[in-house]
Image 1 (cartoon, rainbow, N blue to C red):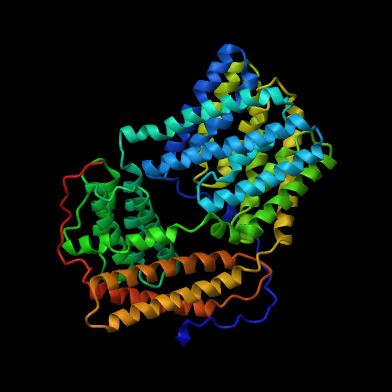
Image 2 (spheres, rainbow, N blue to C red):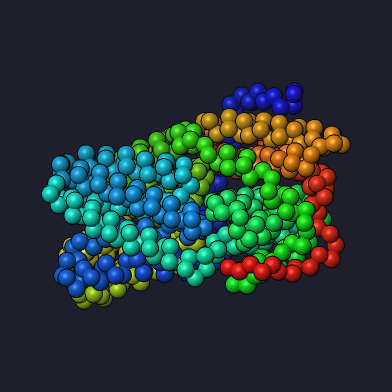
Length: 561
């Protein structure tokens, strides 16, 4: 098929001068719907071990228990069956990084070696977290734990005991993360489905020409479908009811002119409560929900090696940037070079444009956090209990604010990290403030320069491959539509394949557009492929008869949260 053949990439061209926006990077957004869940979870996870160590007079061991406790920050958007697996993986990953750091620290005190090991660990943690899509807070917490442990005096005989403390706290964090399942066992997938309905309604209300709203809605629908697939139990009445609602959101994206935004929003509101799951009152959705699931499962079962391959430039950026930032900190005589290392590790995002934004946020948040630490330090120095209580307050504040903007969360994360250094004993406040401010600037500058030096020249090739996939999927759907005897299963599979290819194209094009120093991208071809692809999607939806009938009500099924 000629239209599915990739067109040759244009010759390299000079990229236009880029603005480096500051205001956009610092503008606060809307808080996450579930901001309080990670905030309360981290307090519930950190408090008991830390207070127990205060009572025993061994607060110097709190670094190890906090390593396990911080695992409670992860997987709050996952259904509980998937959350159990993700949290267990995070705890094991944390223990692996911590063990490597502690053993290294016990074998050598050479700061250059320690920084090098920390940089390699940071790169591995970044690549694995991105490949497995573990979600926020990603690799940053794991890198903070392993990097800090590298610079704690250690003997081999102490390593098992310290790992045991971290493992015990990690088990407690796992229990804290799973506890809400006792109250609302289907809460995460209900929220994911509600978000898909809301974004589909927003897209339908803005009209078919709003590319940003369309991309956000498609991503939310795909996330909701994956959330339902991860629950595993397809025989559940609630699961089947939620699938029907995701189908309705998917249909609204394919044919926004025929969608009813008010009805979609009403379903979303009902899902966010504790009442029954709304029903679509459309038996045709029952057919659609059962088709394409096996294909989606197969698509999601790519090998880890396949998922890691595109992340090679990002891993190299992380290793190089963290190493150079740590070495620069050592050259300046800073006693805690892991602060510069962690700063660099926190910068790296999917492309250079996003990395620049995170650099601005990190610097502003850390410098503001240093000033906040100066104000709070006298209170924290009143005693071990006061120190722990301050840490708990900043832990809550960080998670409460970080979903609005990363720099707001960093305002609380910075004093928290500084207070953690005082678990082993009081430190001179002035020295801590100076070293942290210098390491922040060193890590940000060196880390960003390393990101600019290591370019992802394969980004354009991935866009071309995604374009080819969309064109092939569209042609396949067109062939099915042209067959008057096409089976419903063939129509559903063609629609699902095309929708998935379009989502992947948009994500790939967005990532490549933010990557600097590369060949010019085929932007016009992307726009044309998306336009024709979405027209074909609408045709498949109409052919399947999945458009909602006028006057459909929002009666509810007898299924509960």
